[in-house]
Length: 433
Image 1 (spheres, rainbow, N blue to C red):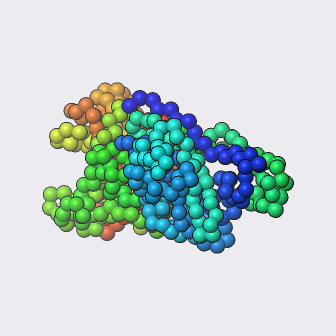
Image 2: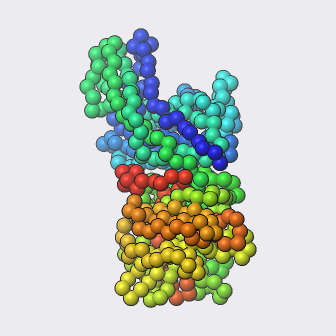
Image 3: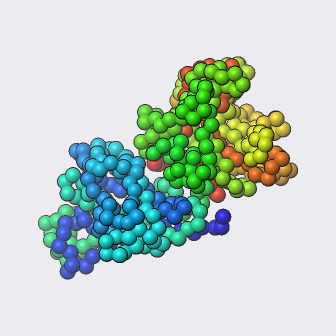
């Protein structure tokens, strides 16, 4: 995959005073009731996947009743534009203080009734209509991209200017913290936009269905991965991957990895793993946020695998693994080669809070490299090591794979999982999460 360069998403509307007759909330990005926090686009397999994050900052509940794209109802485009996430059903309620994530999937070349096509280079003006007939806008540029690329949520870029104008001094500025404008004057407000810092090879934010994300049915390459061991797919393993709205890092859902009866089958312990084998990068950064409840524990000397790199060919053995291991002095987070050629226990497992585990993994027989960060702090760095087996590539995944001694009926959680070409600063997610 070649280097991908995106221009930052643009949010800017300039309307001459002589042409403007509507209310100011029709032309600005931030409003009294709904604040659009972020808009970004991923190009995948001929689809533009536009994500829009918004929050109700008003004092009463509202709902998104309709969505326009460039002034035309999304439902008028052919091929049909698909709404998912928090916009999957309209009207979509939004309570005060509630952060929502809507996803708009647009086929390349989707055409409105006037023949205008949505293709590379086109500026999309997204309009959210609320219960009270207000309109909230955000604008993003479609890009002609090969593979998967995206802005990274919350990464602040350079400042730019919004310009609004008024023909009526009685109209409020759309930004509730600003003053009213007199007729014919303009006012500029500076803000920041996301920058492109990474090529995204894989993404799982769990807002739709984590199983579909791992299988490549949402953001990622179709057929790229699979869920193994889940009782909905392969019995009699008593394990499951599911959405959870009670414990999440950002958005509405996280992934819950659950194992019930560890001994439900004879040959292997019950397990559930998400394996994504189409990364195909010699080196990449693998980042996910984990949450282990305070009650989570193993048995002394026992372990459970929570992330791994495996050979892509038979016998498909693991190479690098991340395990949670129980010692007399507590539960420890350990990163190592499967046979113990390299690795160490790094720290006691954080419990009762979210933490970011990020690993740089370079594939090699004698020149491999592994770096490990927890919450942005470098914990380990191994160089000139073996990080693959007999094959030329490795596949990667996360999941809940315990040994037979592991106590039953436990869960842990993951969220905001990314595989990228660059380090992801955890402070990005501390701001958003």
